[in-house]
Image (cartoon, rainbow, N blue to C red; front, top):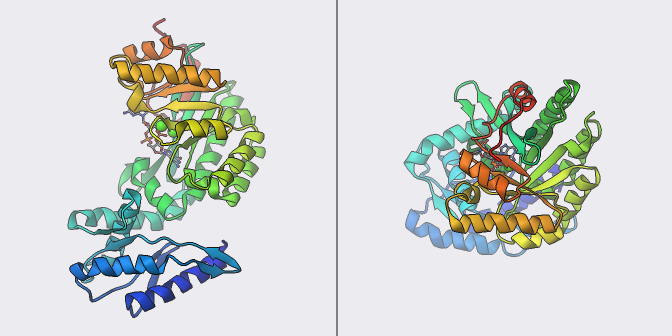
Length: 372
Ligand code: C2E
Ligand code: CA
Ligand code: CA
């Protein structure tokens, strides 16, 4: 929409909320979050929130376009410290759970405050190199060599220490700021792949792309520009996309994925088996790889149901000319099973934990003993 139109939409939204919600002042916390106080008690609140959602059903006209808006509410006691960020945190939990609203509870307080300070620190963190990329090895089961890896982001935070992605990715996605972080990870991964090449090793690298980014032309353009100037062949890059309910603007997403594919990037469906319209994606998307979710892989060598699912997925994928990666391999027996059914790649703690770029290259240089 552009920043100007987004500002206009937020103002119009504020107007409607003011009339229907009898708020005296409405403040904008960030791109997608508005906050206000009300004198209603909790029991009076629910009908009010339902009313506000109803008022949003008719679209807004901004710059000649009709825009639908959906609201999710978070509620916190106004006289508590940090009430606004607590309420915003509750709203984001509600949104992720698919609920219309959620009341903030005290034990969420600390997390909320921490998360909001994280968001404010993000730009600085990217600039000052606190965002690190580790690489988890993927073993090529046909050759027994590690010739690929998955880039996994970490935040080396000066106060909280090394933060895993689950602590900050959902938050950054919700704030609509995952594009910058993803480009930083992609840039880093390209640099490391180039270093590996210079050192004489061709190691393919996979980057996680949030489904929401597949609606963004500006992300696609910036990612393609990075790839074109990369100095490594695009076929060494894979984008991993999770099947997800967010994946709703299918036409747009397909067009963007096709532009990546046309540039030579490989496309992988991540967490395969956990999403909804699994088979449909395979038909619609220019997929080169499936990554079977670790919940199916972990016990495939001891659970008949899981074994059947994994085996038939490999067969189906191969018939469609698609490669298969099994993730979450935690022991030798599991690896042997996965290799035995003809999976193309294996990934998991048994093969290797996520490692800094230099250590990954060292590991990839050594032959790995496989059972068969
Ligand atoms: P994912 O894409 O499914 O990544 C695999 C996760 O499983 C990683 O956790 C990895 O460390 C973990 N894992 C690997 N092998 C095993 C195993 O044998 N057993 C078990 N139990 N776990 C294993 P991590 O690094 O914490 O990443 C979590 C999630 O964060 C990723 O899940 C991915 O969805 C997201 N993520 C990571 N980096 C990025 C990024 O740069 N951008 C985006 N958008 N998301 C990212
Ligand atoms: Ca992944
Ligand atoms: Ca996965």
